[in-house]
Length: 353
Image 1: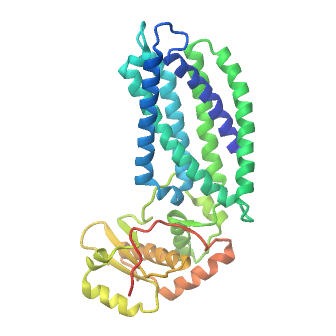
Image 2 (image 1 turned 45 degrees about the horizontal axis):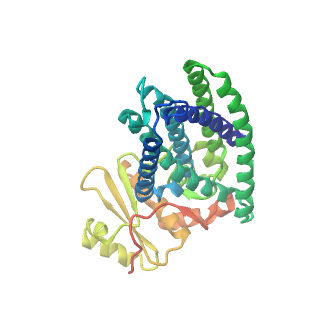
């Protein structure tokens, strides 16, 4: 339901912004130049493509890890782009071609940049969330039905949007309608993301499960974790004053001392990971070296072990026991968690020892 509401609101606000953009591009203006409009639109689209490539380069891996958060960010940026487009005609000169005005060009280029990020983040997170609903591995079927539902909502939204655009004769009325619909759009997105109970682990859900198990001896289900999950989360160790590097490189492990590393390797001959702590500088850094061939459940156990180690070091408590963590991971599948996929990006390659 919430996804339908947000799609409807987005379609209507998009029509209000489209009217403003057409005005800025010279529709109804006898002095507007077709050549200038074409130049401005082409350059603007190329700026958006560059922004798209840059965003994928620096943030692509995080889209799977924090799908809910990036879904909300994408919709907020989309609303911001629409707001810029709605205000853009005010930057045009009273007389003359708006396409030749640099302030207008800068504004619509910024909107195009935001929309490029929206295209990448929105598409990637939609795919990640659709996988969650494909319970019988029927990803194509779920994706097709989701697309059909979105098309229907867009038809309904555009019909209502034409009426709203026709009745909003003044800028004040257009802005009131835009602000109301935008608030509904963002609220519906937050509610929709909060309602999704993801059964695969990312950093935040691993923190919640590890903390509940360590403090109360409870194994949280996906539903219980979803109730505690923050919809806006972009990484972190979950422990104040500590950082966790999962998939640490060899030079990072050696920074904790060669003797310490060799000691850990000799005691972890049959274990697929080693954990080393560097407390020389603040914050405390917990490095996790992963062995080549480590399975998803091994990486998850390593991350939970690192989280509890970071908590123990910062609180000066005894370190967690590896055998107890193995029993915890064995219980997760029985509580509804999926251990065939993991959304925790690795910092470096897997190692041989």
